[in-house]
Length: 122
Length: 107
Image (cartoon, rainbow over all chains, first blue to last red; front, side):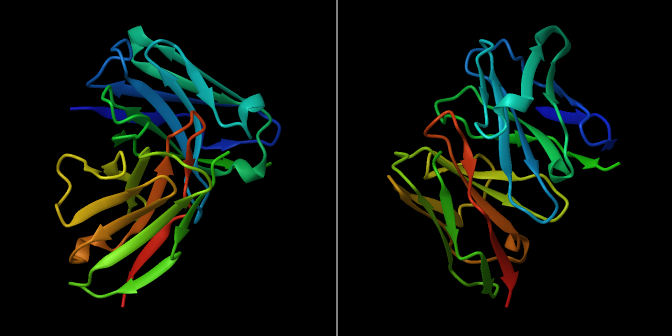
C-alpha cells in the first residue's frame, strides 16, 4: 500500500524560505519510472503543479516558479524535499505531494498525500 | 506553456443524469491527459489517465475520451458520491498543467 505524507511549517513569514518534506512508503524512488511530484492549491482555487523528481534524479519545475523551487530526494529515507524561496502571501495554499507510477501512463499522479496547509503572513 | 480550459466551470445535475465535462488544450497533447475528482478538504483522486484508461478501482460509470486538443469526461449515471470538483491535467510536456476545474453540484 502506497502512502505519502507532507510535513513542514503551517505558518511562514513573507520573504522566508519554505521547506516541505514528503515522507512515503510502499514504493522506492530508485525503481525505474517512479517519481514524486508537488502540487499546490490556494484556498478555493485550482490545482497548480510545482515540481517533479524522477527515479533517475531528473527534475522538472513549473516555469513560472522555477527560480524559487528546489526538489531533492533521499532514497534511503524515502523522502522528497521541496524548498520554495522568497515566500509571499499569494503562496498561501495546501501543498500536496503525489506518486507518479512506474507505468507507461506518463506523468499522472495516482496516489496523493493528505496535503499540508501553509499560510504566509507576517 | 500548454493551457487547459475546462467547461463548464459549474454544472448542476440530478442523480441519474448523464454528465459530460470538456477539457481543451491550447495545443495538441496527444492522449496525455488525466482526470481527477476532488471533494472538499480532500486530496484529488485519479479517475482516468492517458485520456481513456480507467484507474483501478474507479467505477465504470466514469469514462474518458478524446485526443489532440479536445477531451471529455463522462459520468454515465450520476451518483450521490459523484458531487465534487473535477480537474483535467495534461502531461504531454514536462511542464504539467491543470485545468481550472468543474464543480458538479446537486440540481
